[in-house]
Every structure is written in structure tokens, then in C-alpha cells.
Image (cartoon, rainbow, N blue to C red):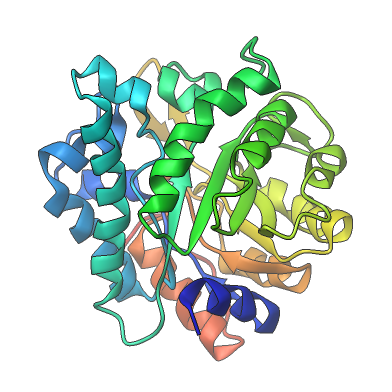
Length: 312
């Protein structure tokens, strides 16, 4: 059985563990990520660091690795003087590095090629607002070339992630048509709305009835907002739900530091699973230590304890 089909089957049978935040693990390894390309810069400059970060999550029990292509775009690489053929090669490398790290595991590990929103390319925070002033057709034209490049690299699934806006979700769903790779669609949210302010019931409905979409859900948001969102995604689409929130800490842009404690805990993950979550992991500031506990708890079917505030 091919891994992509096996992932869909696994979602029908139970819960699959995603990895955590790639950027925080790279920073823990000493990498500097202040560049506009963020972690994608390391695809050219130090790919071994990316593979090492993926490997940390494999050792923690992650069954799905999300690639370092979130901020990898032809436009972004062009600003660094990287020509399109080389940019496509670097995007393919993101899939290869994840695949190589996954081979360290004795269990099946799937690779999800990250397709971040248009705002990630802008590197100005607009990915958390949406409403870029572009039409659906314009957004589709932006996303299609890199979707084609990533699909050609052979991932098991495309992660259409951190989507702030229904218009962009529609564009992405159009752009993946015919690429031959299953996808999940994951919104970034506040409460019961997308970051752009649309009702989640309407946003999730875009994916209902689309066979290429194997899961729908939310990522990169406050953990408490998942309590309602997971159930809505399951009810509206009838599909497995994907959920991977941030740690719950707050970023102080003025001081350039994280404030407060983590609020993502395993008791919450148990409730999400009961509401239909079948792909569960973490996003920003959720590291291998938390994923290790999540994987152990889901494997045992119980013993759900609170996440520690930081990696051990």
C-alpha cells in the first residue's frame, strides 16, 4: 500500500501524531531565522540542520513530518537571487529531507509538504490578517507553480496550512486540482472565525465533498480556540480533523520575546480526539518534548497529563 493511501486509512482508524514547530526546534539547535525566508533559508544554507530538526520529532514519535517549505516561494527565493529552477530544486529538497529523517523510525512516517499562505511570502505578518487585496484567481496563480513543484517531489500529502482567509482557501483548493496528491486544509483562527473574520462554518464548508481533501482543521492559533473548532470542522465536512495549535505563549513584538506560560495540554488533546481530531500535533513553540508525551498518550489510549510549559 502506498503511504498516501495508508495515511488516509490511518485517519479512518485512529489518531495520527503530527510533529511540532520546526522553527523553534531549529532555534534550539542554534539556527538564526531572522531572514525573510525564515526556515526556508536553511534549504540552501544548511540543510543538515533541517534534517536534524525533523529527526528530533521522529525520535519523539511523530508520524507526520511537515516540510520546511512554508515560506519557500519562487518570489521569495528570487529576492535572494535564486533562479526558478534552483528554487524548485530547493523546494524538492524540503521533501527529501523530511523523507530521509522519517527513515529513522520503525513505524510509518508520512511527509506533508507545507504550502503556506501568500502572506508568508510577504514576511510582514499579513498571513495573520488575510484580505490581501488580491482576487481568488490572482491567489491561485501565485500558489499553483510551487504546488506543482512540491507535488513533483512526491510528498504523501500537501499541507495547505495557516490559511487566514476563505478567498485564499478557495484559491488553494483550485490550485491543487489535478496535482495528484491528497491535501489537508488548515485555517489559522481567532475564536470561531478565520483570521480575516469569516465564520468557520462557511470556511470549512469549502472543503466538504472534495475527495482530494483528506482532512480539514486549524493550526497556528490559541489552544483554547480548538475546543469548538474541531467539532465544527467534523460536523460541517464529515472529514477527519487536523489540529495543531501554538503553545499558547504570547509574542511581545516590542521586546522580541515570548511572554506567559504554555496553555496547550494533553487533556485538551483528549477532548479534540473525542470530537473528531485524527491528526494532532503542535505549531509554534510546541517542541519534541511535548510531542513525545502526546505520542505516548495517544498510543496508550489514556494517561493524558498536562504538557510541560517548555521542552525538557
